[in-house]
Image (cartoon, rainbow, N blue to C red):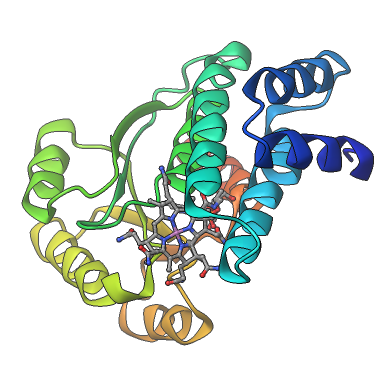
Length: 219
Ligand code: B12
């Protein structure tokens, strides 16, 4: 568990655009033996959700929000491969839907797969549906992960899901992101029972463990 004081120190530096201080806090915390997953959830995600609230309440301007996002994007790239595990032989495509510019949640998820030894094909933000389909045909991944944050992208999300299921009926698909409201989670359960909703990287850990044990025949 990361101390609240560390998180607050990070948030303060982040909202002032102080990248060097943010980087030092993360490096020191990792050196104390805290895992990357805890840093992602208890510092990065927590700070980004707070920044969202501050922006919504007019307590943070767009420039500062963009700077903070850039700092976390940079830290996410720096702190990914460093604790990489052995290759487990599984592969995953992670993508955001078309016109979806919220990238960081998807990137965290991609990094977590990578840390668990998966071969990751990360397509980033705003990927056109036909390119996602082409990449699935090309890479033949074990899993496809779709990230969806902005509610107005709802129809694009369903369109992509439908087209993947139609073209690759046996494809394992996982989805996540804040666009998946309780209603939409319910719709997924009833209309697309094979698609798995994963709420955050803690739940992702459980999914990866289960996936590995199923594939290794221990379940
Ligand atoms: C940074 C940010 C931006 C940046 C994104 C830059 C970037 N490179 O990513 C920019 C400036 C581009 C942006 C733009 C906009 N944004 Co914005 N943004 C945010 C902010 C502050 C942080 C997003 C973030 O990174 N969160 C942290 C990550 C780690 O959390 P996460 O995405 O939830 O991911 C976790 C889980 O959901 C899950 N997960 C996510 N994806 C996946 C995928 C898979 C496969 C799995 C298994 C799991 C999974 O695991 C992740 C890790 O635990 C949020 C506030 C918030 N509450 O998040 C608003 C927020 C998401 N934005 C919002 C809005 C409204 C907008 C704009 C419409 C603003 C505008 N008027 O222009 C545009 C829309 C752009 C678009 N078309 O996509 C709203 C969305 C409301 C909604 N649900 O629709 C939010 C919630 C702000 C708010 N409080 O209103 N934004």
